[in-house]
Length: 544
Ligand SMILES: *Cc1c(COP(=O)(O)O)cnc(C)c1O
Image (tube, rainbow, N blue to C red; front, side, top):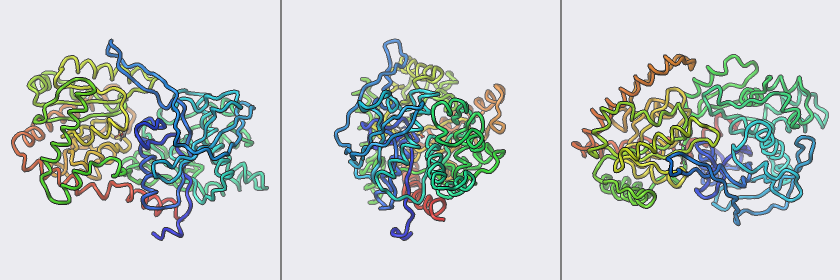
C-alpha cells in the first residue's frame, strides 16, 4: 500500500480500550478499537477515532461478602486529555446540548476525539456518564452525540474525511447527519442517501439477533434522532422498530463481519434485509505491543527454552493472583485461564457440569483455573454466572480463583501466564474472541470450540486443541432441547480433550508441549497482528 495516497478515515466507536486505567471501554469491542488505533499509528495511516469521554466508564464490579457481584461507579478525571477549544451542538429532545471535544493522543496513538456533555452549559450533563449504562432514551442520546456530534466535530476541527467507518450500529446517526448535510445543499433524500452510502463502511459484531440494538421509531423521533429526515425516510433505512444493524447495512457501501465464520453467520442472519451492503469477513487481530510479553517474543526469536520463559511469566501471574485474592497457585501444575463477559452463551461454568470428572482433578490440584469476567450491570443472568464461579472458588479454595473487576490489566496477566486458554461458547455465537489471539501469540495454548477466529488458526494437536468438532445449534433457532443437546455434546468433548489430550501432554510430554507453544506463536503472530487487519480494511473496505 502506498501510504501517501490512502483514503482518510474517520473511525467511530462507542468505546476505546487504550490502557487499563483509561475507563473508556467495556470489553472486546473497545479493546479491538483501541488496538486498531494503535496499529494505525504504527503503520502511519491517516485514520482518526471519534468516541465519547465517559465520566464513569463502564463501572467497577466487585464481589460482595455474600459472593455476589455489585456495581460501583466513580467519576474519573484525566489530565492527559487536550482541550481542543471546540464545542459542537446537537439537539436532543428539542434542547441544544453542547459537546466539548477533547483530543486524546497521549498513548502515542493516532488521535481520538472524545465528545463530552459534562459541562456547566448543559441541562443534561450525564449523557456521556456511563458507557452502556442505560437503555432506551439515554442510549439514543449517547448515539446522537457520537454520530451527529461526531460528524460536526470533524467539520469544526477541519479534518478531511474520505471514508466514515462505523464500528457497530451505535454510530449510525453519523450517516443521518451526512445525509442531512447533503440535503441542505440541495440534494434529494434519495441522492443524499446514495452519496452517503458511498462514503460509509460498517462493521457488524454481534451474531445474536436480540443483541442487535433497535429502538421504537417514535422514540427516535421524540429524541431528535431524525435530524431533519422524515418518518418514512427513517423507516426505509432502519425499519420500525429501527434496527441499528439493519440501518448500518443500508447506510454503507460495504460491510464486514469480524471472522470468516462470523461472515457466514451474519449473511444468514441478515439475508432478508433488502438493499443492504455485502458483508465480507475481515478477521480481528491484536496489537502485539500491548499484549505480548517481550520475554516470550525474545525467547521465541532466539529459539530458546520457551517452557522456562513461560514459567517466569506464569510466576508473575501466580504472584498477581496471590496479591489480589491471597491464593497461592502451583507453578508446576496446569493452569487454565478463562475470562469472558458473563453471558449465558459463553458457558463459563461448562467445565463444572460433570462434578464426578472435574472434582478429583481440582482436589488433587492437577488442574487449576483462574476466572475473570464482568456481567452487564443490568444483566441478572450474567450476575448469577459470576456468583456461580465465585462459589466454585469457595468449594475449591486452592484450585479455582475468580478475579473481580475484569479489565485490560487482568486480561494481560491471564493471557500471558496461563498454560491453557479455554473458550467454550455455543457455536457460532462468538463473533471473534480476540483474547484467544493474545494467548496464542504468548505461547498459551488455545483449547477452544471451533468458533470465531479459531477455525482459521487451529491445527488440532499441533498449535492448540479444538473440541466439539464444529457441532452447532440449528441455524441459531434453538429450542431448549437443542441447547441442552449442544451443551451436553460440547461438555463431553471438553472433558475428552482435557483428560485424554491436554493433561497427558502437560504432565508427560513436555517436549511436545514446547513444540506446540512454538507452533502457536509462529502460526499466529503475523496473521493475528493488527497490521494484517488494517491492511485488509484498507484493501477490501476503504480503497474503492
Ligand atoms: C481481550 C479482551 C477482551 C476480548 O476478549 P474476548 O476473547 O472477545 O472475550 C475483553 N475484555 C478484556 C479486558 C480484554 O483484555
